Image (cartoon, rainbow, N blue to C red; front, side, top):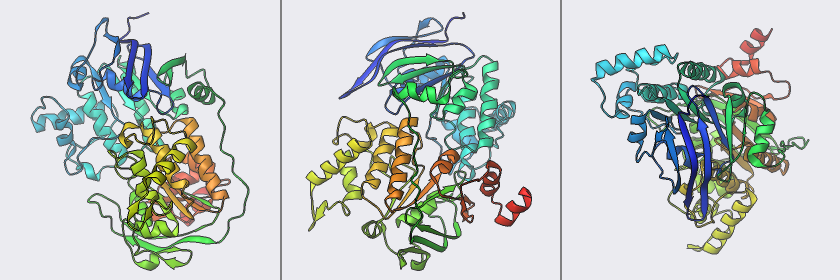
Amino acid sequence: MTEPLLRLSGLTKAYPGVVANRGVSFDIRPGEIHALLGENGAGKSTLVKTIYGLVKPDEGRMAWRGAPFAPGKPSDARAAGVAMVFQHFSLFDALDVAENVALGMENPPPMGELAARIREVSDTYGLPLDPGRIVGDLSAGERQRVEIVRCLLQDPRLLIMDEPTSVLTPQEVEILFETLRKLRSEGTSILYISHKLEEIRALCEHATILRLGEVVATCDPREASAREMAEMMVGSALHRPARAAKAPGEVVLQLDGLTAASPRPFGTALKDVSVEVRAGEVLGIGGVAGNGQDELLLALSGEMRTAAEMVRLKGAPVGRLGPTARRRLGLLCAPEERNGHASAPDMSLTENALLTGGVRKGMIRKGFLDWGKARGFAEEVIRGFDVRTPGPGAAARSLSGGNLQKFVIGREILQAPQVLVVNQPTWGVDAAAAAAIRQALLDLAAGGAAVIVVSQDLDELMEISDRFAALNGGALSAPVPTGGLTVHRIGLMLGGAHDMEVAHVEA
């Protein structure tokens, strides 16, 4: 056996009210793609932040190629040969690719030389990238390439990747996997975090599984099923969402020629979006990131106003109404960006419960806030959606991404909306929590609500949707029943093909 590249021995890190890591020990060997698995709140983020120098452990030690390793800051980790691609990109839209790469380097070379190195590395690893393009004009997959190339310019020995495929198309995922396999063949080790267990099975040869901060199992993902790994993560049997058979009712939400410019400099305008959604129905909307999903949520929530008749709720025009008025009428939305848009990071969960639930849960009376009701509602969400947190007084930013997602979705569902629109409802959420969220959405629809799920996870949309439509370049395809829908037809729809083109190609 070769000496480990990185050895973790008894790492422990505690925060007020929670132990994030408890005695974590495992090895990462040279040229290995090693999966780190666990539920939301299992301690994965704390552990990789420790390796990258963002967190100092309370106990335990690390060894890098046999020598003590204790980076005090990320630059120390990078100097040793550790690079990290974070789940949330840290790029400036108004700058070009080369300028963004330079900002992440300790001592960047002259821009001409850097541009040449970016082209060389991107060509070598199959990640086509033009160093002169403005980042705001790039797709989500191309933005991830910028982050990866920035890391590869450091010639890392260990590359940490946190949920790297959450915004990628299937084609972009395959390109990424080819790159990672090439890096492995050259001796680079990769620590890979993902909730997409079939991807883990296809890519990784070893997995370490955390539960409540402790290592509870290890396995070879090539020999274990996705279900077996999911049950190792949660410590119990995994239940698949069950859909109740029920005919849809009356039209609740109607979009009629919804057309609107994006309020964002690099956004996508909505183009003549027309669709009807009925009570008891789940409409799934798929699309590659950046094709108008955010703008559609803004137009439906009331954050972006349109002509009144373009959005109708039970026949009444609401396009000119703001978010509070729409919530009062029963149209609720949960945006994709959970930390900063769906929640205020520095506010407590109680305060965040009040922000969107104040009107429908009776927390505001004659200008006064009922903090008792707000706290009670936050506690109801925490209990009902198994949000791992010390309590309702905890700040939103203190929760793991998946636990904050459960809080945001639960907060909207428990307000009993007539229409609920959610964008990426299970993004960054573990298998058990994803199943629970999907079941909650199905239960909401079974109770008579109209539900719109916008997601890049096609498996998710096929599992819970009654009808499917594709968003491409701000235009929405005509919805089709999900029963019998093929992956080939979905791909054509995502690419912007219209019904006649799809029928012609399939024929």
